[in-house]
Length: 167
Image (tube, rainbow, N blue to C red; front, side, top):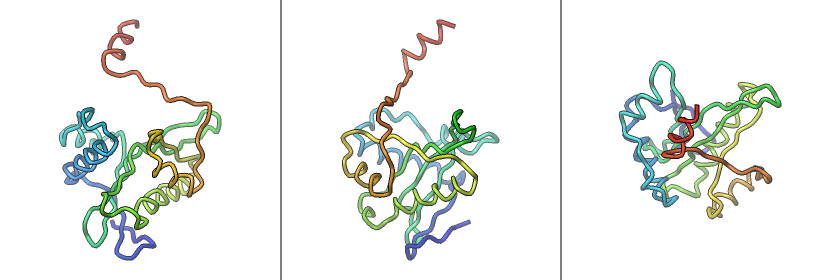
């Protein structure tokens, strides 16, 4: 089902199984922008299993302008023990370069905020690279605040493998 936004000819829809190639292309475009293309391991098959199995790990919405996909958001639930309620963690928000500045990214993010409110979630949160000043300014303009005092930690690759052996 396509959802009309406040922007003429811009619709948001849930991704489906046939969108795995499109989602992967958006992931690669975003990774290239973030100078992290070398880290992309996802394939269409992996995305199909992860997003469209009987127990999906994340959801994807697609933004379409005049019938053509121009961006996406990939998100999943997190949980706040302090509030006792779930939230949304936004993993990716991406709009194709030629389509930026038209409000499409803001509309995708506003949709997630509306979804969070409708589901009585406590928050929507995400990470942004510290050098990505255009995105940081955009996030400030919508009222997002930095979580000063918090630093993202990650175990992956060999470190994850080695630490798991400690169990």
